[in-house]
Image 1 (spheres, rainbow, N blue to C red):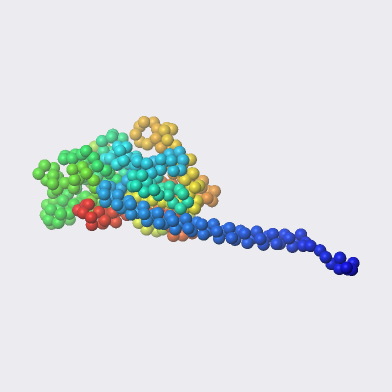
Image 2: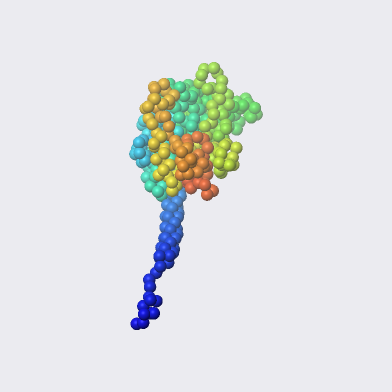
Length: 369
């Protein structure tokens, strides 16, 4: 071998090796990104299937029990106590005249007899009509009574009331147009061609829509929209007047310029409950919710006992830190605005229970008239 040939032999230069490593890194990153997306896609499809099961089970629960279940309240860690008895004023697994103890919590999986977690292994978030919480009855907690013209009556369970006590659940000008068999929450005489019946006691007890204190406590005349109120009803301050906000949830298509208001694109304004999976970033969202959940530390739950739930919603810091979008924050902050999926800024999976559909299904099965 000549000296020239020996001089011509050499390995890769540092620049060549660096370029090769860079290319390998880019390829691996692309494969990893693709694999992660495919993994999330598979988990999303699994979540969609579970969501369909939840919808069917909740529908069956409603038709069997005449009401929807209350949420299971949060505990100290994800999944702990998830799916236990639905929180209510009776603690017997069925909501009472006092309604539910919380409006935001876990989906009560044991109550509805369905083991349900999303594709990422997280529990489902369950939020209901806010007026169904601590709403009066006989427990003197300062709440207001729920009557069958209020959307919150969808959550009221069996009770001991009957006879004259049923009047507590009827608005003051609630009437029946006998010629059509139609009940009206207000202005019955204006809608009916003959004088309406307003007395449902004594000999008229058979016409009482309260069924002797057994659910369902809602009917075709129950107000639906999120902005509705029970006109002419009592606000329970003994002044003989007032109105009760309907408390329903408003489902929006998205937020405008990063700000979510009720004026944004409304998809539905008669949702009495929503079930939500927080998607691929659910671990961090649930962590924020449970970190902010504080019980019995001097917060106000309006029962004058000096304690209660201070917070049970996610923190806005999740948005500030770029972990979730403003739209996703709206789905975990506990207010009445819920953002439906459909844009790149949200990967939540949302199921809402519409009061129109609830009444339609209930009427078709003979549950209400």
